Image 1 (cartoon, rainbow, N blue to C red):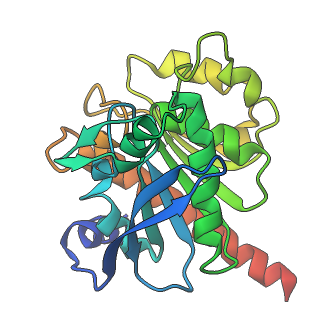
Image 2: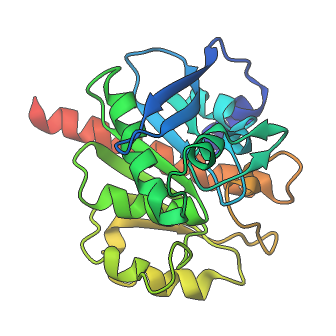
Length: 252
């Protein structure tokens, strides 16, 4: 427990040496996708960060630098369904509107796939998808049949993305390692959403100290109970790291 608490303090207090820059790449339908690249070391694997609806890559402005302490690079992506967050405009959404390209929530699947390709161009490491509300659902769906995705972090997923579209049905073959959060109020709905996913694949976190906050905003420093969320997330990543070591030992 002392080591875990020390890790939490590291997330909050340690100052990273990293480069941050705005980058752009193309989605499969020609849309220009804008993202913030937090590069710690090009050889490290990536966490790809996706925002909630009516938001932007600015949702991760204070979260991404902390995740670098876990020895990952981060890419915070503007999905085409969004707006502004933390004074950062969603430039992918603007490009979609300006070029009359469809920008419904479900269309963001193309942007997530493009982000995976962008990260894979740096190295051959599998990526982790990190979604917030609607993008949590989409990240899980994209991950289901993508061999380049190692795990998914899904903050408050649900049946949000398109009327008549069943996220639960789309996840029936999901087999990735999954960290899942839900507020106390929504946890029963989220459990139904993932009912078909093997239990040994899922780490399901529901806060006890607070009623919880939807989406990645739960990790913001001004969000009540954010330390509890960070603790659970850190323990999940430690579990992932142990899994890597176990695989290395077996292969020797």
